[in-house]
Amino acid sequence: MKKLMTAFLLCVIFAPVRAQSPSVAADDGESGVKQIRTAHYLILCDDGDARDTAAEMEQRFAVYNRLFRFDSTPAFLSNAAVPMTVRVFYDDEAYNEYVSSRLGSSRAGAVYLHYSQIGRRELVINRGGDEENNALPYQAFIQFFRAFVSNPPAWMREGFAVFFSGLRYAHNVLTYDEHLDWLETVKGMPAPLSVEKILTADSSSLPEDFPALAWSVVSFFLNSGNSEYMRTMADCFMLLSDDKTDAENAETLMRRITRWNSVEVLNADYRQYLDSRKTFTWLMDEGQRAYAVQDYTGAELAFLTAKNQRPSHFAPWYFLGLLAYEENNFEAAEQYYLASLKLGADSALTAYALGLNAAGAGNRTQAEKYLREAVRIAPERFKEKAETILSRLN
Image (cartoon, rainbow, N blue to C red; front, side, top):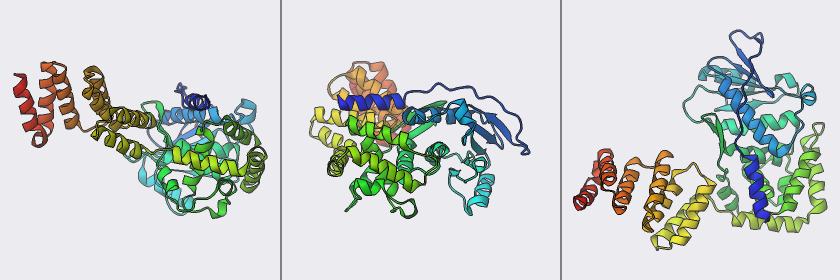
């Protein structure tokens, strides 16, 4: 039941968000800069259409605040660091010049600039490149968090920034893939820090892999399945103060955590939780090993877990298609293969698999269509194999 409660909670946090239409504000006095004002953001754009950025930021805010429940009423907003400023560049050179003039060097993708003066704070985004902006999800959360708590504890700032970096925005919709890239880093540490040392870490002297450690503690509190830990986290959110330093906030939260939780039990549960978590790569390898020895039940469990962990990756869908084919469930296999193809699977290999599947289902027309497509895409790989199967169909 506890795990179901946690799963339900995370489904609520990452449920789809309805995009809101931003309103256009007056010119801010900067020559050539367009403005869009939303409920929580002021978007400044040197070129292009900033409405997509405005919609994205509001969707991100909604997801963040489903968890934190910060006061974002109009009365509060009038006295806080919101509307938060987001400056968008569509020119790569202009972005680098702007950021370098403030930091001494540029930052790839996006950077949040935090100042003691609220009016100077801003998230700066580079839309000038074609590559995916991996920095934006991380920096967007930092801006949100520090708008309400200027100096949060290091573990909470870094941990949740990594946690929410799995939020990706495309085609006007936010999707979430749990960010497990750091899991192997934490598991591979010969002497990882204890939970209490992570929770009290000094922002001025953080270890190199601290974001991984901070994420692991956040993931533990949210996903352990223990409702007491989730309640502890909720209490910590309410105890954060915008008037305290990061060290003072960390100390306040540590007192709350240790007041109701044994440090020894907390550390033991944390280690057990880490041991129980499997990376996407581990799950895929385990599934393929099980498939190779015809342990189809074990393979299916591993691939389904991998799919749920990273639903936007093609590999689990493809291998689930193989399993369905082995069980003569040709309709399900076709759907899995088509899903994997849509998500970026090898087009020639998937076409060949679809051809085999259609042949197994007795659909000669579809089998010929897919097999000839595989040959067209990669004749050196599939011509001989496809012709053998086609000869049997005639």
